[in-house]
Amino acid sequence: MAQMHPAPSPLIQLRGLTKTYWTGAKVFTALDGIDLTIDQGEFTAIVGRSGSGKSTLINMITGIDEPTSGEVMVASTPVHQLNQEQLAVWRGKNVGIVFQFFQLLPTLTIAENLILPMDFCNTYPVRQRRERALHLLEKVGIADQADKLPADLSGGQQQRAAIARALANNPPLLVADEPTGNLDSQTTDAVMQLFAGLTAEGKTVVMVTHERDLAHFFTRFITLADGRIVANEIGVPA
Image 1 (cartoon, one colour):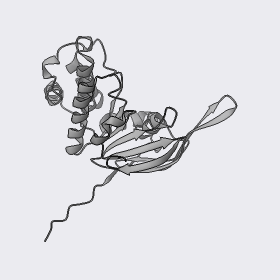
Image 2 (image 1 turned 90 degrees about the horizontal axis):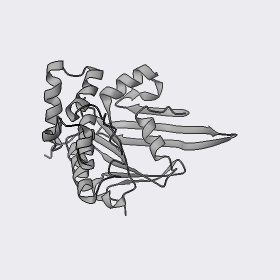
Image 3 (image 1 turned 180 degrees about the vertical axis):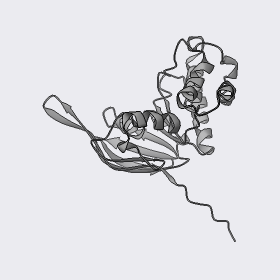
Image 4 (image 1 turned 135 degrees about the vertical axis):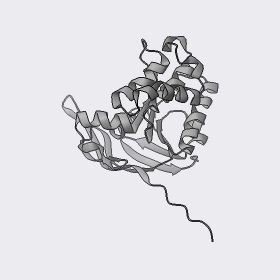
């Protein structure tokens, strides 16, 4: 008899998600009634033209911005109901964010950049934090850069460091906004392999990208246009 494997559980559930902004005397709808479920362990691409709502969508998922209406559930937490103080604590422990321009603190060493989120959330005993930082840097292939400043690293090395920092508190969700936008093709491939390996370990990765030639890395493609989902494709899109 074949062994039954449990179905993947939803990590992200968006219901009726709407975000509007006032621009002068006009209302601009950035997101218009988004319904979306993303399971644990998926590597999801968010694609669409500029102004389609991609960045607004990930800002809702991470709690950086709040919806005008609708629900944002991440790992069963109603993110849309949290106040700013609760959001900061929740985000620190549950979401790793990777930016296009790395956002490493320039006056801290690479290891210190990784230790800082652990200090903020107090997720690991003080004596274990540097050891964990070195372990994560080894995981992304730059352990030998631990005691250098960000300016001493290449762009690809800084992005690897940023990914390691996003993993510092072992969050279930990683959100990346154009993380390969400033990298050459070889470094881009290495960074994408790293993300794919993390999803194979059970992390959920949601990534905004313009780069369709990366399609083979993703398990799902969400295409936005005018604040709405116009395609939700499992696997490589046609």
